[in-house]
Length: 182
Ligand SMILES: Nc1ncnc2c1ncn2[C@@H]1O[C@H](COP(=O)(O)OP(=O)(O)O)[C@@H](O)[C@H]1O
Ligand SMILES: O=C(O)C1=C[C@@H](OP(=O)(O)O)[C@@H](O)[C@H](O)C1
Ligand SMILES: [Mg+2]
Image (cartoon, rainbow, N blue to C red; front, top):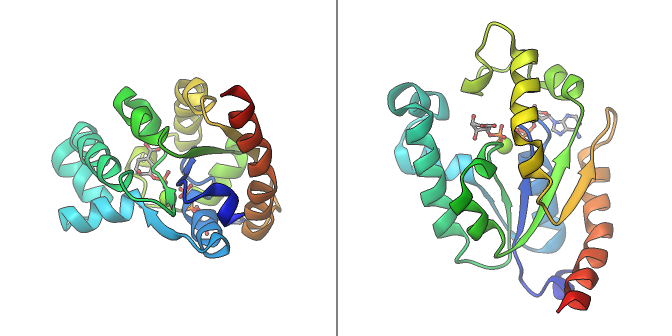
């Protein structure tokens, strides 16, 4: 698989809580790829948590840092990159994402909410009605996520290992499509 990909980066996109960070780490191991989580790089570079960045610099400040990190990361090869759920919002980010293969992890809002109900590390969910907030974010972003090369649907009970396997099994079909279109 790794040789079929020829070092092309894999980008995981999708809503917060869908499992991009968890599955991305596993996929990287299975592919013999490096693993990068854009949120971790942002937090390290800023010396602050994601919550602190949103609090002090606002969402706009965070989005700028996110684009800066993505523009640097995409210069490397052999990486699996777990992005933040809002990376799809900026048009310029798509130019970077399309350097690699883009995988959309999609899951029902109810599943995402059940995972993040007690979570305090997603500033956009610190809302009076987090489930409604998730619904409206997904509505805004669905059309953007659907521009991915591959969509993988995640259901309750799917383990990270099963999801990683499903992604690996689906990659050849996408690569074939890309070749046949050239
Ligand atoms: N397949 C899964 N089954 C059960 N829990 C999961 C699964 N994938 C992720 N999680 C849990 O859901 C939460 C969000 O996962 P995370 O990987 O951080 O998602 P994302 O990076 O997309 O926001 C974490 O607590 C993680 O342990
Ligand atoms: O959906 C979003 O806008 C965000 C998702 C988060 O990452 P995860 O998708 O890894 O939770 C993080 O980037 C930030 O809290 C904003
Ligand atoms: Mg994450």
